Length: 68
Image (cartoon, rainbow, N blue to C red; front, side, top):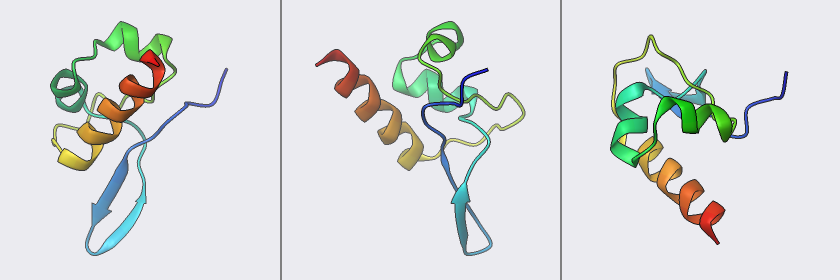
């Protein structure tokens, strides 16, 4: 199994760390489907329900870089 290409940033109680995966809301906001995210090897965490603008921007930049 391949290591995911990109993981989200999580901020909790003043600590910033690498997350387990992007939430479904973040994927939808960035214009990605679950199937496309899996093909691009992007980590997905179905349990998360939060929407962080930083993570959405990260996904949009990734899509932009892949199109070039």
